[in-house]
Length: 342
Ligand SMILES: *[C@@H]1O[C@H](CO)[C@@H](O)[C@H](O)[C@H]1NC(C)=O
Ligand SMILES: *[C@@H]1O[C@H](CO)[C@@H](O)[C@H](O)[C@H]1NC(C)=O
View (cartoon, rainbow, N blue to C red):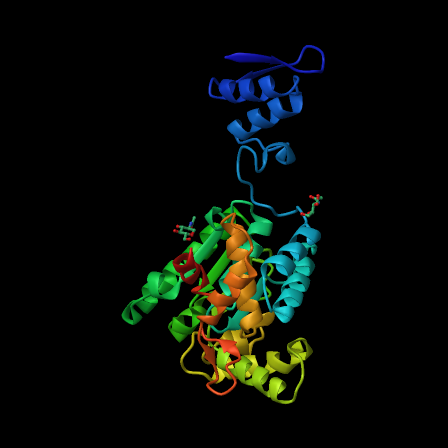
């Protein structure tokens, strides 16, 4: 037993032996700080009274109240994501609005669409890291990949039960849970509607409120619609940045609802407007691919070599055949291609 003197007169706190090494570390680093001692004690006894003192340092905490740092989010979206002016703007707006609302009427549901390699997974990672520093490894973040978690069509009813129970279980532990569904285009269309009750405007279901949770859906579906719109724009001689959200948002939701080859086919989520934002990811051009190479060089602590970046970007294939505008794989294989040059 390690008795610790509290600043108030005559109050003593007896801690479990387990707490002693932790306290020792805290006390040896800083001058005797009772705040940390109490925080450590409460972390161990499960008595949470000073979350700001230990969350992130000793334990990962569910962040229900803490607002989002808008500057950090905006910097990430601007500096790490290339060629996606619409996604940048929509995601920033959606997330800041949602996170600063103490009483949202429903959970936030974002559906990200675009060709492979355009940054959908990457943006999900940025969102997650801005909420939880542990990123995708956070225990409050749940990733479901259709072909990995729900591969067999004949097990549909099992998957439905499982998915519902996971979402219920995790959200009851942490209201600010994040659920990401990758490969929505490969998901059985019947499955996603089983989570409809969680996305709806209910105050609570069986005592659990889902209103502070985040749902992110990723899919290649709709990518061709977006690309067609971009090509039209290009043919009219207009700039990429001229594309506005309303130019694609509606095309996207109608297109997805009617497209048999995706998880949103005839989905009640779309019919009942439970998806808050359809976020288009535009096809990437040569200049963006080049930026991806430069970012990869930076990431590997190498010199940013413009000439090398151009060479790697030139190795990607571009479509359509005549104009060769858009990289077929976006930035997806850039890292591997770069490795061959080093
Ligand atoms: C928000 O993020 C910016 C940029 O990363 C940082 O400089 C600033 O200190 C952060 N603000 C808070 C309150 O954490
Ligand atoms: C939380 O979700 C994971 C899947 O990401 C699942 O394995 C786990 O059982 C769920 N936890 C609860 C309490 O339901």
